[in-house]
Structures are given as C-alpha cells and as structure tokens.
Length: 315
Image 1 (cartoon, rainbow, N blue to C red):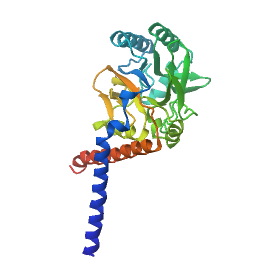
Image 2 (cartoon, one colour):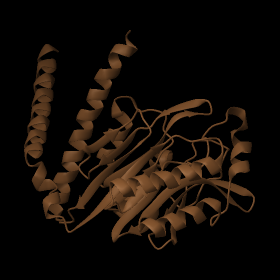
Image 3 (cartoon, one colour):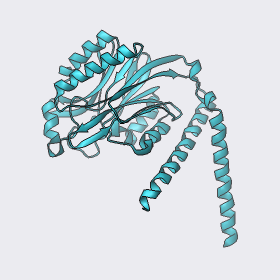
C-alpha cells in the first residue's frame, strides 16, 4: 500500500515538474509566441466605465461628453466602447422589467441618432449598450457605429441567465469589421454560454468587444480566466457607481491573445486606452504553443484563485 502511494507521489511530482518547466520555458519565449513589434495592423481602443443616471437623456449627454474628452486627450483613438445597457440603470429591483420597457428605444432611435453624429464628427467607431424596443419585445443590445455614422452591427444578448427582463437574441456572436480588424461583439454573461464560445472559436476574431454590467470581480478572477480561454485580444467596458440597488466598481481590461491582462482598471468613472498591435503570423506549431501557454497559465490562475479563497472558506 505504502509503496503504491510513494510511486503515485513520484509520478505526480514528475508531472507537476514537467508542467512547471514547460510553462517557464514558454514564458521565456513569450515574445516569440506573440510579437507585437512586427504587427501587420493596429487599432487604438478606449474602454469607458461610466456612471449612469436613471434618465436616458442625461446618459446620452454623458456619452457625448466622454467621446469628446477621449478624442481630445487621445486623437488617435479609433474605437470608443461603453458598457451594457448604458442608457439607464441596470436594475430597479422588482420594477426592472417595467423600467426597461419604459426606456427602450428603436434602432435607429434617439441614442443612435446622437451617436451617429458624434461618430461622424470625431471620425471614430462607437459601441454602446441600450435597451432596444423591437415590435413587442425588449432586447439587451450592443450597437456598433462606424466613422461614417453607419450602424454596422447590433448584437442582442443571448445568455440572460434566466432573467425575464429581456428577450434573448438568436445570434450567439455578432461579427463586424472595425478598421479591417475581424471583431466579435458579445455582452457580459454571453461568454458563459458554450454556444457562444463555440461560435468564437469558429469565427476566430482578432478582437472581442465585451460590454459589461459586472458589479465586481475580486482578484480579477473572471477577467483573467476569460482572457486565457479566448485566444483573442479582448476589450471590455463597464459601468461605475450606484445603480439602482447595486454598486458597480467599473472593472475593465485589455487582454492579449496569450491571456495576459495588459490593462486593468476599476474603482472610478474613467476611460482606458491601448494601442493593440495584431501579430497575425500563424503556423500549426505557433498556434499549438500559444494554446499550451494559455492553458498552462489558466491552470496557474485557477490554483492561485483557489488559494486566495481558502482562508475565507475555512475562516
């Protein structure tokens, strides 16, 4: 019995040792796995954490003000993204469904009209969430407008996690072209859907835009896990501050295809910017090593997260 335990322990140590050694080797070769210095294209992006009012008209003006400020401070920004249903509060307790029916608008509508003008004026892509009214239904939708002021994509949230506030969309992932970059649009908990993850793998986007209404993410656990699963650049935008019965901490990220969080921000109403440089050099070996790096990073990420949770569990 003891001999068997010793053999199992030795095998386990050997496996762990090999795993750590391979990860360290890949870590040292990280720049070879993804080399932004030789990028064939780039995109300057901005994510926004905005404090929302209960009145859509106030939020529309705040959105216009943010676009103006971002472009004044960062004239080279190509895309500005806002969070999920940013034209109003996210939750009103027992009156949430009635509230979103009240503030829902058509596409095109009041918000898209203002943002189309802003996109043309500032020559920038704009993406933002709103409550969309369509026939008798209300959808949780994310809009993308190009610098010419055209509405190029509307994504309706698919994974509502049992909520009856909105109708679910039927397209798992909405694909769009952003300055020549193959871009996927999803909304918050969409990423938890296996159907959505399958569509992302099939679509192989260079960039994923993820609008959020995410109250908090202690230790960046969910952000880090998703970044390591997707294998694409990721930009998120959120909301910040009191919002009905909730408080949002404004957490946002920019993550690279190896799952590294290049930018992390929270705890204030703010915007983040980053120049994404796309390294599109591909080969079977490079793709396999990138996947190995991400999944070994994911393993370490999960172990670290569990170690942080243990003190609270056994308190």
